[in-house]
Length: 574
Image (cartoon, rainbow, N blue to C red):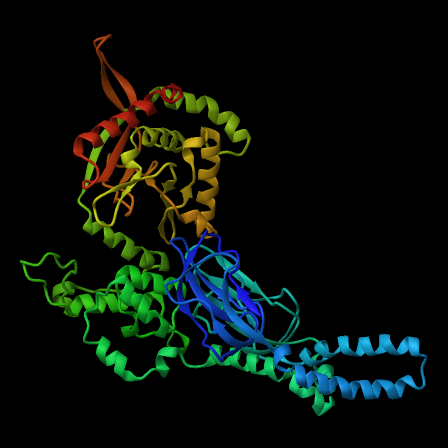
């Protein structure tokens, strides 16, 4: 039986890890392959149970939908001979009963008996269930709502999962009795991970019937039983790296902490960590086999990676002055236990969102960033907004000046495409984006998050205002999906009415620019025609840019162009 790649959501993806070996007996929905693209990491489950007879792909291969991943010898195939024997026994019993019944009714009875074999064999067995799609790579178990021995109904909430973006109640997949809970409060879990074992309803009667079944029927179910046993072992057993000898670790400890992506990929096979953690390890260049996991069964979390990096940086020797790469680490904090010097202190944990944001923010220290400041006279634009605001409000749409800023900036990016680009890894090319995907920074209680409005260049003010409102609500309610946060080509950070006259927004790598918007204020402006000062509503603009891609003169022209469009949005129609 061929197990093929399902719809991956992309044209092709790379095989990052093969989770089974030839000879393994697996259950249906066991993860067999880890695929990674530039957009996501996906653990591919088996669509059937059986014994692995062939692996048709290798780590590093590019696979697409429909390609054969592995070949299985299904449980039914391997037990075919035993089935034939069991069938003969059943046929003899059926023939005995048939002597007292019409021949026309014997065949349906035999058929009914055969069709009932599978339910009878499955009933009363503890079945392991995996988590559904959570909408994020990983999330934390916030609350376990049931206990071992509880009787639950189908779709009853049994687990509360929380991520930086959302809280999700996981329902019971079936009705029955809780046999085992495979996760604990505080664990980081991923899509498809086994989390609970349930004995379905009516199990007691089915179990009694199973015990009275003749020995001839037992071989038929031995393969699935082994597959379930293997699935349980994969869930509760020790991580793979614990089974490895200490020799590879001894060699790895002599290597530098910073590894190439190819080296890290090779070591990922021996690591007990989710796809998101593995991807972060590659981004940070960390040898993940040297990281100690803090979750259940020594599973490695993102926080473990951050702690490892912090420890490495604190113990790392300063790079020589003649080196090509300067050390980006900060010195350790001084000992603040002396109250006479430092006074009383207290510690406060960062939110998960803040912790996750730190590596991305650290990229900014590697960029030669410059900020260009300007003012836009939005007096007439504000009058137009006031006229449209009433009708928009009647439709439940919040119509702020930010909608005009997004539209004007998107149009300016189409006229100055270099600001809507990325610098290639080898620093020899600029990759121009043909569409404008605008990131909008939104402040939440947990920190700043940047959802994305796609293809802004094709949308009008009303649609932009609607999407800004929708994304802001989803961000504050932690209901943003992964797709809502991906693909930005430029970012706008608006401080609204928080005050201030200007600020320096940080370029969000790999983007090359970000526009900061401060609070508008009435200022005197000289009118040459009237030879007098007039009060005008002025909007401060702060454009930060990557100086490797953008020249200072170009940044000044671009900022002034946005200011001109905001002063008279009719120019966008020209």
